[in-house]
Image 1 (spheres, rainbow, N blue to C red):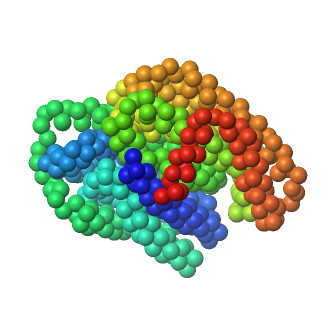
Image 2 (cartoon, rainbow, N blue to C red; image 1 turned 45 degrees about the horizontal axis):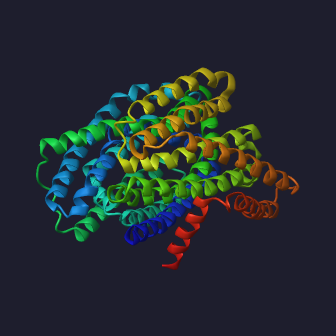
Image 3 (tube, rainbow, N blue to C red; image 1 turned 90 degrees about the vertical axis):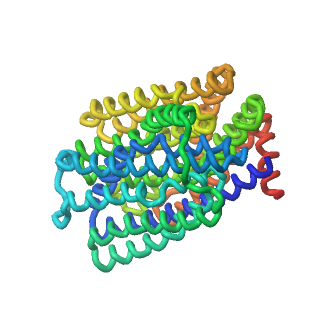
Length: 505
């Protein structure tokens, strides 16, 4: 247990540092791009990233399934089986890289149809797209498979540190290019260069850490069949998360244009950055939870799940309150009134954020328990419904309609269906108590949001000082209210004991 706590804390600290850099520098780059080049460039960036995320679905089930398969042989010290699994991943990754390149080239004629309105005159969308495509594919040929060893050994902090160092250098160079040259081609060429450097550095580090693990051998039929089943389930399982964001961006670009997409992505960037910061804990804990599931009783893991849910709901709820109260003041200070959406879109984005966080808790445990095949139909239904709703409502309701479509699919398909799978196939407990607790958390959050937002409205003006005063209010008031709400909960009390144990180390 102590080892798992140590690894989770170490991974979380490295993850927080990494995410801070991934938050600060892209924020600076978005600001410079809008001011020196124009919002259309951000729209192109968002569009091509979304298209290539869909292409990358060929990999989505593989690395996680392999990491799950490594938990047991690592715990048993079976280096021969580890090497065989490792070798299997290397071969498949090369095939995936080829698939992404071929399919990426084949869909090139469709690109103009995904953009409504004009494209910057100095940009050839095909050249730009091929740079993005190369960046997406190159990892699969350059040691990306080695990351699975770090993840399975609960050392994702190594990857985080390498990424932090390399991306910081890349972002600094990109800032210089934007300010001095305003050349988007030079700016974007740093992306594949950075990908190559990260893969080489990670490969060297893995070889040093695990010199006794040789990437060779062949899996027997039983192991291959088990991996195929997990991979098949995981590909479908992961579709919903990728398609959710990608489809939203593609639909906005195709129907409303690059400017609207850029404004939406500015808001989504802030929401996603906050979500990524708190999701570091779930990412860092996934391997530890997987180890716990492999070695501890279901009853103990069920208690841990409820403790984790209580603490995560507190943090997620607090972040939701901050977004509601600070979104518009921050966006106004950052980009000005021309880039503001209406407040109803802000409210919808806050709801979107919170339902995503609820699904994160369930996702983390389903992933650690390997319930991909059992969950194979949910992501297909969720993705299809989301896309259909997006297309049906975008013309009449614009950005609001796209966000509402996504909220509906998460709240009424992802969460209840995902919870059902977890509770039926792993915990073997009734789902009703979890759904009641979730509804209770939502009602409590609504009360906290109304109280905090009402206090913040008393602060007038659009200055930095008024923003800071609202920030202080958002740091103090919600947490006092959440403490009063949660203080008598047995799971909260267990969570506090867990946190004190971490800090006492």
